Length: 624
Image (tube, rainbow, N blue to C red; front, side, top):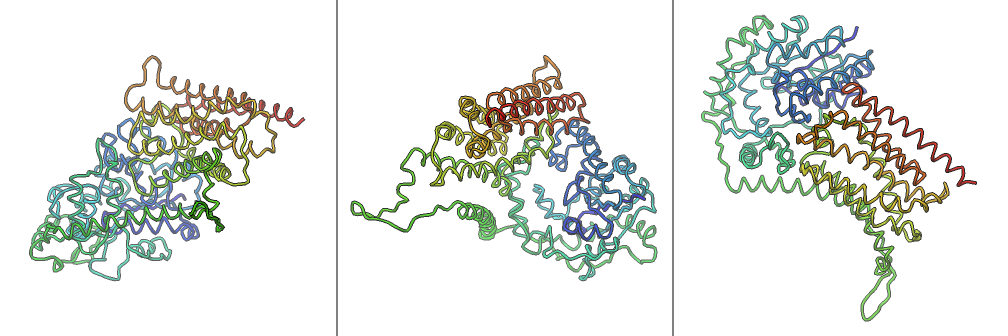
């Protein structure tokens, strides 16, 4: 029997702790016959909610998936359903576990819960839904920090606007899910941490699975202290989380650096009691139906609240203390990256020295005395910049990641996400190329002299492209990626005769031509994808032909370029990244746009076969 366990929260009942444990317990789960779903996203399976919610709603959950229009949602639904089916079929011997508290907070209608049921029903014979309930005033108080992290600016701890919604109505929640999945398929638990200090929701959930869980070293998603809450609330007014439906690049990783600190603000005791009383009938209905042996659903202890609501004011000294802490955390991360870079690339300074003209002089003074040495150092700096800027962008949270940028408006031409893993191979080979340039034993050559400065420009270009993509400078990314490709291709093609004459075992072939040609090949397929993405997103794609025809024309043009450049250089280094990109297109479009997927697959086969024939025929002549 194919089984699944679906944990739906509710919010602020330790869901993050459960997900953190599940995400790190693959071996323990596998031994017990379980698998935590990957296709739905980890550690939080938010793609379930992004799939099942009303397709007309574009909220922060969907925006984080790069979905900004109902059309984006439709495409996502198709691709996600297929990915989930592949995972379920590939692990049919395991019980698949899902976990996302957004299923509680975002799936608020029968239709939305039914959409999730209809997604899972063909894949599993049985789906058991697990839900934890917590007293509403405690949830609301805990949610205040979460709301601030999500960019809200309200001053009151309790949100009276939610009293008349389904968020805290547990009777409506359980009715909704039992109607769709069946009452016998619901496991309802009480979140007891507030009343019992020894309660662990991770251990409780693991107990349902019949496994033993190791408690995380620190509690994830810890509440913000009063002064941190107020600091973040006021910052939210100046630096919102989203601008025009996109992540605000100016915000960076602000909410990641404002964290923890202890007790947050508390509402007045009377307000907390009144808030909880608003759901008394709902709670009583849940007790009668699900916990008939208990006198009440929750305890009636409100002594933890003050007589009056904790002040929202923050003094100048407190504000600067939080600001200093944020600055220090950001600086520590930045310095750690810089220190690692410094250690990796620290030059070796000879100890011997001589005295000339009254000053001490080491042999290091001559490091940049020749054009070759100056060029080599610039190449190394450009390579380090290109590699490190990509890592810094992710670490510091500057704007969009390259994957988010690439996923935006990919309705015309889409490349599967796995294809971008080729950057790891390219960066590694480029690093070898750059380090070899500065080695004293590496002699100069006409080929290195011709390709050196263009390679430095191209490397600087791809590094700056990361910044342009992060801040959504759309046309700058087009100029940079086309410019970097052209600045590499022109000298490579000009030196085609010299490259053809290199023997197969030549170091220049493998340590100069191959890394630079690999980069040129990948940029050659990435450039038209970049252009089509921006034209599509801005509604500027010419309407003379359909978007599919434009995409097929791009595929054909890139394939033709691969064959032409391979004919000139007689190496496979240019074709291979293009073929990999075409495979990424074929994989992404085979279900979404079959004609385009087929065209990419045909182009892939033709390009590989003809390029290999060209290179093999040439290599035989060279070796003779």
